[in-house]
Length: 119
Image (cartoon, rainbow, N blue to C red; front, side, top):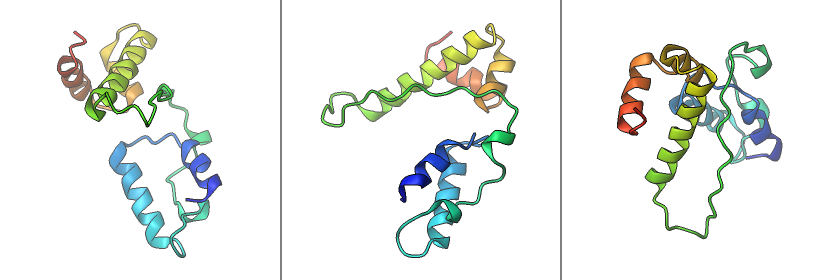
């Protein structure tokens, strides 16, 4: 991936989910000349600047790649818990508003809160 491509992707709000990112990258790889994805190869629905919806910024990962003591599932679970906690605090524990902020349905949020033991 070209150096400016990552910055281009990070500037996009991604209103969808991980599948949206996966689809965008697959399409970009198909359209790219050679094995290098460049920013023009990535076709996004709308620029991040046009998005008026508030965003939750995930905490920067502090994972040392040489330290493999924490399984990936636990690490991702911790990141998800933190994002949900921040969204709930930001919306004064209004689960409907927090779900919208996180880009998921109320039902999905309720399920994740229960699954992660945040009740």
